[in-house]
Amino acid sequence: MKPETKIINVVGAAIVKDGTVLCAQRGHGKSLAGYWEFPGGKIEPHETAREALHREIEEELLCEVDVADEICTSEYRYDFGTVRLTTFVCHLTSGTPRLTEHTDIRWLEPSAMPELNWAPVDREAVCILAGGMLHVKR
Image (cartoon, rainbow, N blue to C red; front, side, top):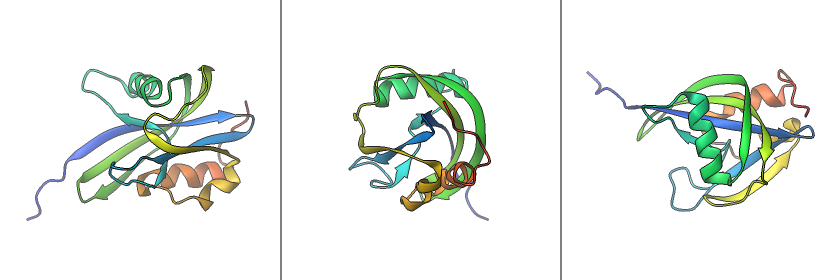
């Protein structure tokens, strides 16, 4: 019998601006360093997914967002546990994203996003956005 794997509930922000989406590269010294992701993080026990996303974007990118539509929830089993990621479309409301935890950020058209080396749990949302299944104007 396999041991139960730990479930880690996290949120990610597909921040859209002028038809492009913010992509963030994970920093050195972090798990999955060098992979690309939608910025975000763990949902604390007292938070909703949307509250966690507001907090994480303020902490990681020093800006504020409006959390809009949910894109998808995906799971991926890593060696450290299973990550359950809920990704939302977000719009900047205040500030300009700055690097605090990531090594790079890029604004890309959705069709160009699959060219990056994405963390496995983020790939479903990337496919949805790149496939044009969600409108990213604004």
